[in-house]
Image (cartoon, rainbow, N blue to C red; front, top):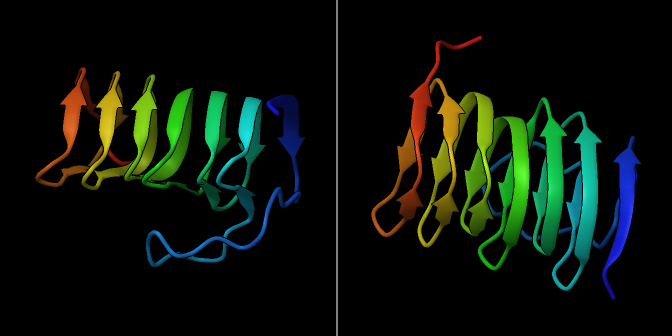
Length: 130
């Protein structure tokens, strides 16, 4: 059943996820089967394996799992995506789109990596590193 909430701080929403990318510990997690509507504002690493509609803000890393449907405005230090994002994505460090990712929206980052097999429909703005 979908629910709506705003997270601030250290809540874990599900069990520990499997690794999408070799990264530091995951600070927040939205598990498979969870439908989240709202805003996540977080420091550190956030992993999403469920569906999310709203906004994600982190100064750290956002990991988007392969079966994810994300309809959101995303702001992060680094974004690593294997799922589907519809919305604008801004990163202060880099955005990495890994197959079979689908991104429909604007991208703004100093570094962008797109693997073969990714579908990207949108705009790209390359910015200097912060």
